[in-house]
Length: 90
Image (cartoon, rainbow, N blue to C red; front, side, top):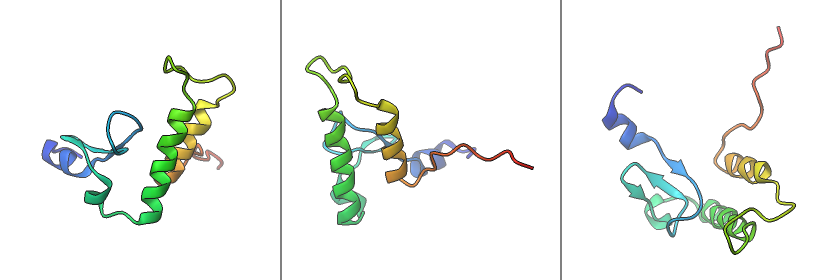
């Protein structure tokens, strides 16, 4: 991707907190309604974000016993990103 306009129009960031959605384009959050995603995927995104809040203490620190890497892996799988390192076998 070499063009800033292309970047702004094609890159979607996904992270919990800060808005009523986990979807973000460069200008800001995108509502689930605007996303035109399936109801099932939207429900999974909402559940993933709820798990984030449930994993935090009142001081916004990870609770003891929470595997933050597992949380990240679940989010990556939810959005179709492989969580396995590429094989370097010959």
